[in-house]
Length: 77
Image 1 (spheres, one colour):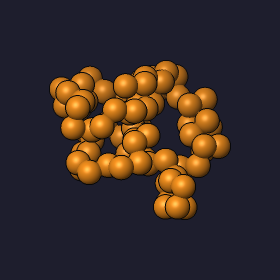
Image 2 (cartoon, rainbow, N blue to C red):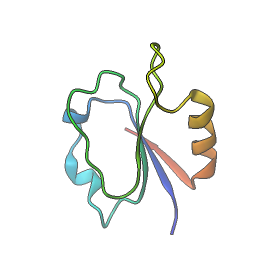
Image 3 (tube, rainbow, N blue to C red):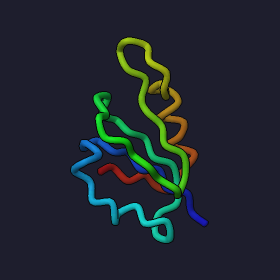
Image 4 (tube, one colour):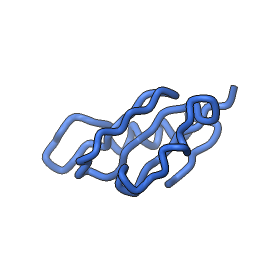
């Protein structure tokens, strides 16, 4: 099975939840918006956040680049 990385640039509440139906989407998700107010649940893989300017835990940009190259495809939404 191909691994897909989803990079979400838009606020989570503006993304159609049907995009992430468990049968259709498998792979990790990286939330690029630092001000997440709506919880995002996803069962097709792991959900990551980018590390913010205040040093909040999350993926560093180096980790993000590594994740992009580890996956078969990357989708930016």
